[in-house]
View: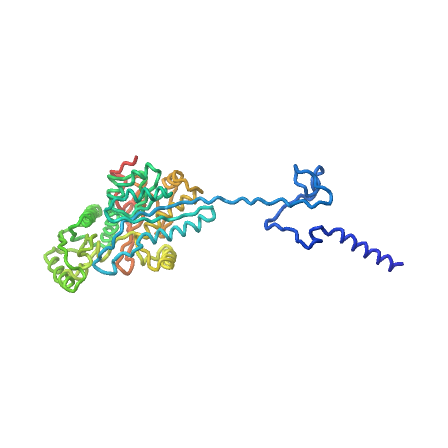
Length: 448
């Protein structure tokens, strides 16, 4: 009796299991599974059959109903296009080691684009770079207009001051922000400043002040100044004169080195300069340091170790002030140097860092505002709380009276960093970085 009861129970269980098999499963089809977790109520509403979406007619008995398709919302991508407009021509230098690389500046922007996309990818932001080149001193309006028509609302410029001024007002009318990453001319921050023109490259006065602070800190206060005959040489010489007066240096003598042309790297040229420099510096009064202003690469490299009496050289040769140094590894600099070298194949230079910083400023503002709108990004950059981290010891901010980026000045030779300014003891009521360059009480800039 017990055996018959057990057999009946087993048969009943098999029958119930067979009835539970769905038509789809009976035909060998696996039910569709969603890759997303779903949450279902423990029991359907009383007025609605189990599993039937609200507002839909009840399913006919015994008929398989199609499974509703899931609608997956796709996140829109905000594309932020950045332009890079540069004047380029192969440059000569007294030493082949000083010839700028072909992608000087552009490489820094490209690395920053990748950095922006790493962060922006989480916010649906995509950054792109559009590079255009013109001849030095050529008209740049057409190239700029093409860049803007293609969608760029942020344009980096590695141009002369004259070229920058030819487009910056057009840029304002088109709602474009311009970032100067190449010119050190103070005039762009002073007499010709603009509300839509930002500067990540330091000025000549900032570079000269950084150098002067170090020389004063070393108690090397008596200087002689040798300067070239070209416009840039004269401008840097003026900045050094200003720095001497500002920080207590004494320029005891000056000499002009005329550019007479001739071969610079031939055997006869080297022999000639080796004989010429000692004689040229022979009649100078006693001094601690020889300052050289030679932005045009005519004679500066030949001055160290060729002077009549042994003295340190600084300025365009010897101890050189710059926005960045390829040997800098302080303040996390190793991280950006290694990343840059892996991608580009060389160390990072000043113009690379200026361009990298400009692109990162746009990226930082886009992240903070979660927007690609130029008006919102400009408002954020000009806000009191804006800053950007740039491997230089502290977060960098803009001077709101001329939109020059505050930043330290690196002092080094061609192998290592000697120091960074501002130096210890040079104080300021707002920021010690404002001891470098033209301060707010001195400025003649009047922003719109």
